[in-house]
Image (cartoon, rainbow, N blue to C red; front, side, top):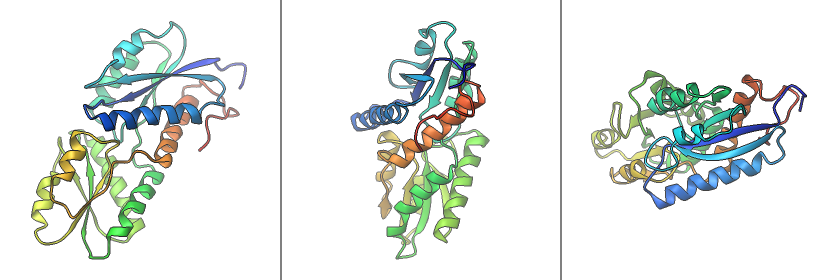
Amino acid sequence: MSTSTPSVVHVLATSHGTDSTTGQQLIHQLREQLEQMSGEVLPQLRWHEAYVDVQEPSLDQVVANLPAGEPAVVLPLLVSDGVHTTHDIAQAVASRENTVAARPLGPLPELAQVLALRARPHLENNPQVVLAAAGTRLEIGQQQVAELAGQLEGLLGVSVTVAYCAGAQPNVAHVVEQAGEKPVVLLSVLLADGFFQDKLTNTGAAVVTSPLLPDVTIAQCFVVRLKSALKEAGFVSSDDEVGTV
């Protein structure tokens, strides 16, 4: 680590929050995995649990309780941009000096590869392949999902439709219904079990893949986002190693 970079950086691993016990466990496991991956990092990363909805502690509470003057990065444990990144997280970052936000997963090629691997065993009967996302009214989030679907088309060599659980159109349940007798493969791009994953399971689709977690590649994708945020903020130098990817 260079002498110009801080010795401690706080990382606020911020999830949406869920009432699902399984979903909560998966997010906790992800945080533990990320902390373990960054165990050899300099500067020292100090990890914190935070949520933008449903669960406590809230991101605002965690930010308010951070030691004054010490740098912090909010790491969204989210798949794409939406109101939680552009409003909740942005507002929390703006409320404190020396605090920045990393990007959500977005259309990382590694994420597309994970989804393609899950889709390939289910393509024999020429199904309709649907990338099923949580949904957002914000164009930026919809563009990220569309770009991810485009990458999947290139990897799989088949058409991939985008559909959403809420907040945007087309709706997943409607897409499955419109498919009629044609089998539908729903590729879940949800991070963990919870309300939306249950909605996918109840659509009647021929195949519904499991949420993204647990998966070491997904954890590595979040490390990629964290590394970028640390470097862009100047919290590490180009010579510093930040985790193993």
